[in-house]
Structures are given as structure tokens and as C-alpha cells.
Length: 286
Image (cartoon, rainbow, N blue to C red):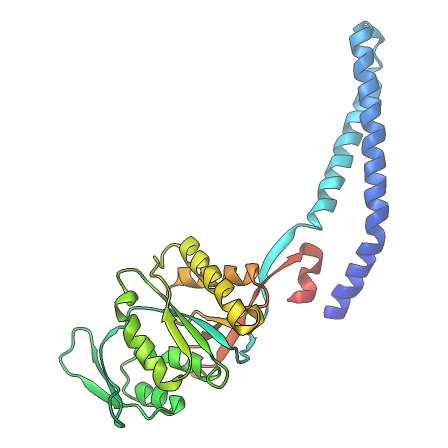
């Protein structure tokens, strides 16, 4: 299929210049023809005007303009999402964090680290020991069947553990910003040497705010990790509008990517990227 698209694109590119040149020539000639007819209409009586010329020239001009429009659409940029692929480790992470659906108490003092969780509206607390081994810990959290919405964030972090030097938390105003310190402490268990900070709180329901904050963070991190190709945006936590803002951010920063932890049985971590392409090239990318 890709070979067919490449062959078709080469065929179109060969014919493109003759089409453009012919269309431009037709517009110039027909435009001059119509201008001559209009001058005659002004200078001569109406009965002496060659109306048949106008009736022929106008359709030709409209046809030339339509062909010119069709040719310009071949250069219009179309934004698409590149096919999903497995995530590669990055040095910097920007992680969207939603308000926890459980009350949290962290005990990270001493060697017996643990976390207490209580679902909202429930009375009983559940204590989960933290081993410091991230895969063991998120499996232990999953075994509680609490469906804690921060557990997938740990899954998304796992692949980057050996490389991550910086983590920035995207938090919501009057929401997860109140729990940013808990998330910083939790991630610090697995990334003791990384620089983990919360970004200024924003309104998750405003994609423009999300996009602006993410782009600001990417620009800051680029200098610290050697380029945007070392940056991953994790949209597992957050809302649908944070996902939109994150996706658009990769259009401005094409070497960065965004990842998502699947919620099905596999729970794989997949990364995506939004790219710009001409309409003719669209098929070869998909």
C-alpha cells in the first residue's frame, strides 16, 4: 500500500509543474481578454461590444481559478496522529496528574515505606507496602482492586526510570495541585536523583492553558536534556482536554512525543506524535 502511495505521489509531482504553468498562463491570457472586452464596453456603444467573447472568457477564467484552487490544496497542511508505537525511554517527563480518587497517606520514613489509601466515601484504609521496585509496587496497588487513578502513572514511569533526570507535573487548579507534594514524594521513591517539580497550576478544561504550560515546560527542559527528542508527555493522568493540549504540543515540538498507558488487559505504554503533512503525502504516513 505504501509503495502504491509513493508511486502515485511521484506521478502527481511530475505533472504538477505543467499544470501550474498552464493554469497561470490561462489566467493571464483570459484575464487580459476580459480586460479588453471591458474597455470596449466603456468606450463603444453596447451594440458594438462583442458579447460572445465575454460569454466564452468568463467560464474559462472560472475554470482556471478552480484548477488553481485545486492545485493549492495539494500544499495545505493536514495534522494527523502518527501510528501508535512502543515508548522509548526519555530523559525528561511532563506528566499530567488528576485529583486522586482516594485519600492518601504516605509513610516514607525509615525502611518500611508504605502508602495508605481510602476510597472517597469509604471508611476503611488499605495499607500497601512500597518496596521501591516500581513494577512490584504497581502490581500490589492493582491487587487491592481500588482502581486508584495514580497507579497507571507509575506504569508510565517505569520504562523511563534508567534515563529520567527531570519530571514536571501538570496539575489542575483547585484540584490535583493540592496533592502535588504527595505525587512528588511518591515518584521520588523511584527517582531519588531526579529533579521533580510541579508546574504552575492550570485549568485542565482549557486546552490553550494546557498547551501554553506544556510548551513552556518543553522549552525549559530542552536546555537541560539536550533537545525535545528527549522529552515525553504522559497524558495518562489528566482529562480529555489535557490530552488535546498535549497532542497539539507535539505539533509545535515534533521531536517530542506523548504517551498513554492502556487500560485494557495488556496495559501497554504506547507513544504517539502529531505531525503535519500535505494531503498528497497523507496516505504514505498512515
